[in-house]
Picture 1: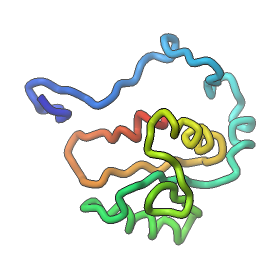
Picture 2 (picture 1 turned 45 degrees about the vertical axis):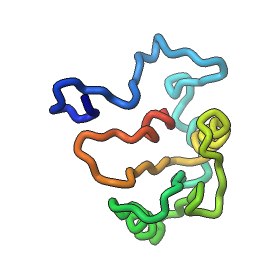
Picture 3 (picture 1 turned 180 degrees about the vertical axis):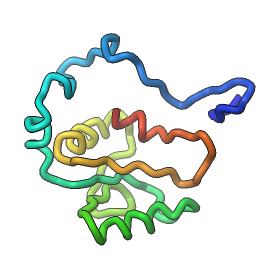
Picture 4 (picture 1 turned 60 degrees about the horizontal axis):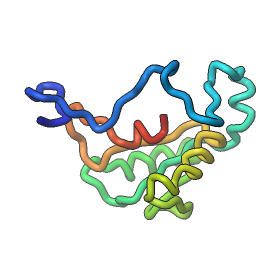
Length: 124
């Protein structure tokens, strides 16, 4: 049993549910807003939340290269901006990123076939 699709038993980290079954108080779907209204609140380009600063995937090198072309704000141990690692307490950080940033960057420490990072599910 692993996360890999060629496993006898596939066990994924997270899941995505149908929108009509997914209701959270205060949550606004993009369909309820015009693109202009959504983009008006987004005055920053990209955010990256990271705690491991030197990785086998060399994601930090990719972000350094990307920063030559667009501004990338780095949150966590590897950057000047801070957010807690606690998933419940970090909700405010994710809300801030969703509201202010056009892009959220998510990269794994290592490159593994079929793996989907938990960060993918955090930002949904």
